[in-house]
Image (cartoon, rainbow over all chains, first blue to last red; front, side, top):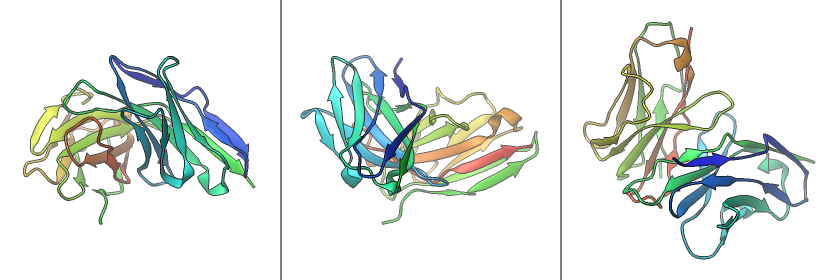
Length: 115
Length: 115
């Protein structure tokens, strides 16, 4: 069975400072990893994914994430936070060995960026 | 182009009533997923369709839950004899193809409240 842990319920950061939202995973075989963002009363929006190749993945809105196989982590990062980045962030893992992927999500981390 | 749409956006049902939730995926997307998101939790997988075939229904919590996608496009999730524990946001997602690496695009969800 696959699982995702997001150890922080909430992350607070000042605008302009770097941000990190943590994610660790457990899956059989090599993982597919995703980050999604959810704004109030809206569906989840895809940010970025790791499939294979370069461990540093760049995505939408200046976000990036680093895949670390030895630590089974896929932390989301941004060099300079914006107030508009405040939202709920979900990390998800998909199984690679099936013909389709049923994503397993973490509980989510609320990011609050203060002006 | 148009994203994934879901209707209704909000549904209040009395315990014991049947409900039907509709999902219109992105045109041409092969894969369609239903997820259930309880308050303060990440989405949890319910069922998966590849075109009109329901390949995985392992996440459906009981036989009161039924989903269909008869023509390989629009899907309906039906819940019979609703219970209070069914109260949640039901998310639909579609992806371009069946492979595990394709990101899923989510609709805004249907918030179901059972009273």
